[in-house]
Length: 231
Image (cartoon, rainbow, N blue to C red; front, top):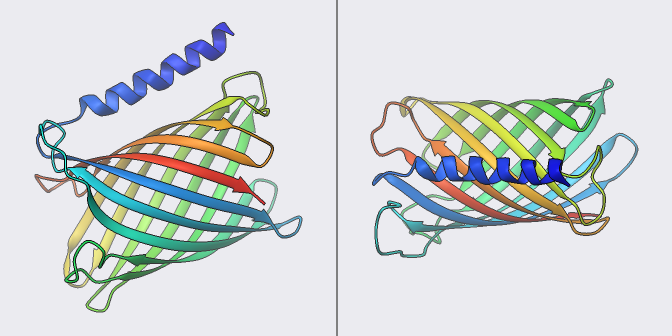
């Protein structure tokens, strides 16, 4: 019990550290996500997801808040196990940006990724390499991404029904396009989840994003509420 409480305090401390990054130019956004995961065979898995994003404030120090719809998206991803700890997958996502403004183009996104995850006692460490092609009518953006993450149950060596778990990750992204200069982003995320049943998880994420290190107004904090269903 003492160990799980200390891990919970770690989550609270990391969550608070992300909020301390807030400045006048740090926007606050809230995203709701639903993911359905299915194991089609011993080696092949399927993920279906949807997400809806709102901007709550353009700056966390603002006294007024305004819920502005940003986009609605739907995605699917198919993956297969390679080797003992590896997985390759490919996916497609469509994002409706016109719900924010008719002047913003909708987006088709293709992705290809390789992940390598290995467990060390209670802690699972995952490396992920991913390529994205963000396709709009006027332009295409190519992105190279690397994410390093670790997750662990807060009670014991494995996650049981009704127990909490912690996830910590960081990700770097390099975006290239013929229409604009290269952009380098960084993301830091801490998440707390609960294995409600054998099939259902809920998760709360706090993510701090630096979107283009060379821009001035480039920082955003995301609060993400997620429901994960294992089919």
